[in-house]
Image 1 (cartoon, rainbow, N blue to C red):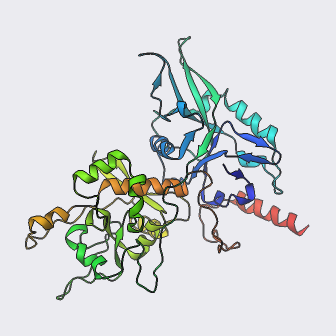
Image 2 (cartoon, rainbow, N blue to C red; image 1 turned 90 degrees about the vertical axis):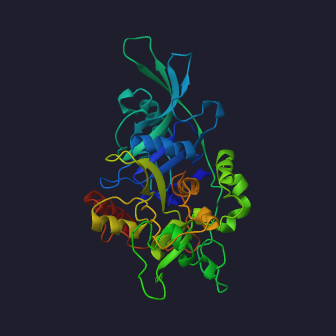
Image 3 (tube, one colour; image 1 turned 30 degrees about the horizontal axis):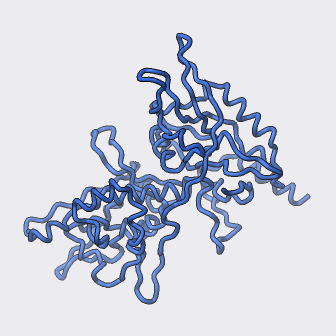
Amino acid sequence: MTTFVKRAYVNEDVRNIHIWSSRMKMGHNKVDAILVAGFFVSDDRPVSIEHVYQWLQVVAVPKDRALRPITPKVRIGPNGPREFVALVKLPNMMEFWDERNRFDHNGFTEALDDAKHEQHNLVLPEEVGFIQEGHYGLFWVKESTTTEDVQYLMEEIEFEKVASAISSRNTSNSRSGQDTSGSSGSRASTPSNFRHVSSDMCRISGQPAKSRNRGANFVGLHASHVYPVSHFADVGTIFTREEQKALKSRKLWDDFDQPFNVMILRSDIHAAFDKYEFGLQLVTQPDTGKHVHYVQIFERRAAISIREIEKAREEHLYLLPKARLRPREKLEEKDALRARDVSPIVLAQHFKTGLLWHVAGMGMEKPANAVDEIDLDADDSNKSDDDDDEEEAHEDQEED
């Protein structure tokens, strides 16, 4: 259980969606475990309501486990009314803290109580559309069919934060040649050895390896492990039984330094991938109906390289399909077993960890060596005039 302190909420500036628990423990000058999740949306990077509820199944666990699941599958009787967890629009809950971290308990609880009676602010899981910027509370909702119109009765519910199974990941090069995955930085991990599997290009940007007589030039491209090899000892606790069974059935369980766990990525994109600044979410492409992996960014000011590519192309990015084998590249049967695309199972696990790192609760904690003062909004087009006015007023207060 963590104590919510406004000043310690360092990720407030990279989020414009904040999801709160509607019931919480409150004591003197503190509120415990009230922020369930948060992330960033914009007109060019919307998040569907359906996906928000999918994310909540990962990051939000009710204190009363009997109230699970998040999605509305609980019914009273075969055709009876539903009971489920749902989002309810709230006012800006950050306004109940002042600059000295004094908390308005009464104002906060009154806002939650008022929300219970505002059915028009209820965001049902089956709604089609995108989540709108703002604050939301998670309530336990009961359908009432006593009238001709369906009514919804809302009750408070308390949540707990889920801790990430992978708490850290080695993302720096050591003098011994240790790479970002935790495996040896020898030629065995270079992209050319996975060429026939992950193709001769970055699977996100499409940047190709340059051809030459002595072989393709992979400088700037990395063989990126999706699940970190350094955490191989933890696979039994991180992957579900169903996922383990699926990997074992394909003979892909005993060694994660294989093509099913490797993608070719440009070096800067690889760095953001290892930091879980973006993940690859399996979605249905609207125009084709095909299942594809969408590049989902969790925070504002994250995965800058991907944002620049999207801005230049004026389109969202998806995991590019693996290149087909060239006619001259006929593989032996033993090599063909390894010539598979990256597994959707490891991609799903990476995406789940990204949610737990950057979406759950207050998000990533502030590093010990983080810079306190930095002007990140100098060229930020998303910053409003109101933000400038608020900052100027705050500066005037400090001068006084």
